[in-house]
Image (tube, rainbow, N blue to C red; front, side):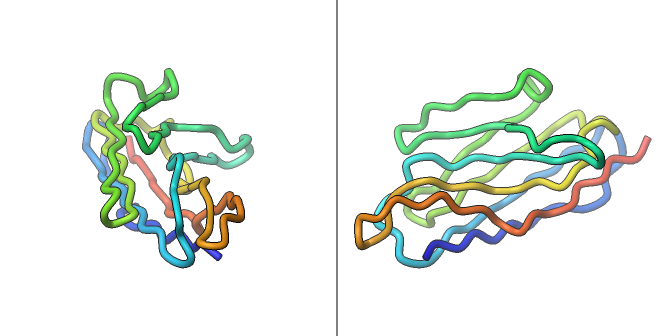
Length: 120
């Protein structure tokens, strides 16, 4: 089992910045991809950004240019920095990870989510 715990959400004014953190723990052999998703009320969950074990990143158009995803492989952690926050960034942000357990079983794990609210 692989568990993910997010932190760093909260209430921020428009134009501000936020840094989300996510730490993975458990029977981890590898973490191939770590990602951030978000889900706003009444909307589908969407990918915000992802980063591979090689450091390759991909961003949603809605956050491209104002966000940075990074990871610390030694800590099994991933971070998301979002600048110039907009009210439409308001959502529950979820951390996700994909890899193999110590038994070489593939896993696809999700965190419990952290609320980000951007006030106008």
